[in-house]
Structures are given as structure tokens and as C-alpha cells.
Length: 332
Image 1 (cartoon, one colour):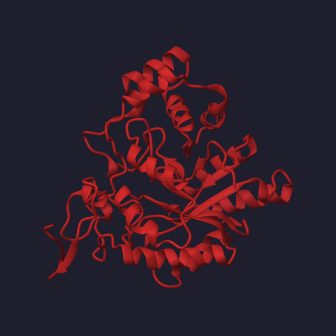
Image 2 (cartoon, rainbow, N blue to C red; image 1 turned 135 degrees about the vertical axis):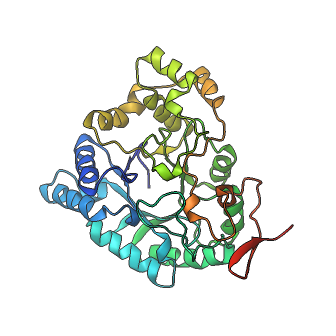
């Protein structure tokens, strides 16, 4: 399956309601977008499905002409629940099958919609490779049964990928992860390239509309970085378009969401309008500063208060054990 160079995200970031997202998808579909990244937890798949259904019925587009991706949410990791979630997304989206189905996060931790940064679920737990693999087995069965064309992972780290890839009977088709000029995740990208895993980049514009719970004082706004602004000014385009052009040049598939029709059109045509030079790409390489914007604090478990525990920043998966009423990190 060949993926379009750019897709349309559908996460409203707790700022856009279902109707607004569905309207944006409808305009994007008519404008020429052919890849749509959805998820059950976004709460808008039924509205988006109505858009797809109308488009198919009118003959404006055929089902086989578009790539529709969705994800199983963290509260559906139990036996049989992955299949239940997948079939619900297929029904809501009115597409008959999914082109790519993602395991949204590598653990069963979840949170309420619109929650703040202090929110914690008492059942949250650290990552365990054997538990992940059990869920992945059901993901594999979805492909075997023909419900999905491909299965994929999301929000993984180098350490987690190395731990689970040898255990996979079906290797992930793609990895969806945060990627933008100030957060380039080079080691993870190189691992995926070696393994033949496609990269889908979320937050490709530096996520200016991300939920408040993920914002911290040290965050860097990609569109305000001087190097990016200078390249944009020379080309007479918005800095956001340079971020997308960078992603496409890197071989990622960026999936920005936009609600305004002008921005949707600009996103769609970036690949044809902006060809970054080797010199510009080298300059953009220099702005990488490990600026993770989606930190995931709400997925933490009792015993951990540092979002870095989710991301294996030292290159290792920490060893945790449950003691009393909380998880304790073992000394290595």
C-alpha cells in the first residue's frame, strides 16, 4: 500500500467539537486529501463516517481511493476488546474495513476526555513487553480476518520497539509518533527505516493547539524558531509550511489537522509548492532540541510523577514492581 505524502489528522485537541472536525474532513476530502488519521478516543468517528458515506454515495470518491486509519484506545486492551473496538470504528466510519489500525499507546492507561494534567487513573501501570505482546496478538488476528489491511504501533520508544519487534508474528506496517523540526527522534526514525516501518508524524507543526495539560514553560514553538522563520520569509510562506515540507523531505507522512479551509489547502499542496534545498534541510537539522510536546503526564501510574518515565530517555525500559499501593522502580 502506497501512502499519500501528507494526511489529515482528526484529533480536535479538546478544542474542536465533532461537527467542526467532520466539516474540515469533508472540505479536505473534496479538496483532494486521501489519507485520514482517526481514533476511537477522538469521539468523532461517527460524524466523520457520515462524511465518508455521503462522498461514497455521491460517487465523488470511491472507498478504495482513500486510506483510513484508526486506533484502539487504551481501555480496550483486554481479550476480545481489540476486535470489538476495531469493528466499532469500522461501523462508525462506514468504510467496510480499515487500511491501517494502530495500537494507540503501549499500555492500558487511559484518562477522561478534557482532563487536566493532574488527572490519574488508579489502574494505570508501567509498560510490560509480555502484556503488550498479548494485545498485539489480537491486532495480528484483525489482519488475518481481513478487518484491516495493516496493523501498526504508536507512541513507542526505541527501547520498547527493540523489546517487542522480535516477539511480533506480523511486524508493524507503520509507527505513528511525534515528529517536527525541534523533535526529530533520529534514533527512532533510523530504527524504523532499518526495519522497513513507515513513519507517520503527528504534531508536525509543533502542535500549537495541543491540550493545555501537555504545555510546560520550557516548550519551544517550532513556528517561532528563528531558522524556520527565516527560511519561510525567504520563500514567502508561513513557518508551518516549512515544518510540513521538512517532514515530507525526511520521508515522514505528516498528519496535520486544520479547521480553516485556507490552511487545509495550504497543507495539501505543500509537497508540490515547497522543495527544500540540501542547505535548508541542514539548517533545519540544527534546530532539533528534544522538544517533546505531547508528554503524556495523564498516563502515569501511582509511584511516578515524572512524564519521562513513559519515554525511556536513558534508552532502557525501567523495571517496576507493585509494592503496597504503588509501583516502585527497581534499582538496576
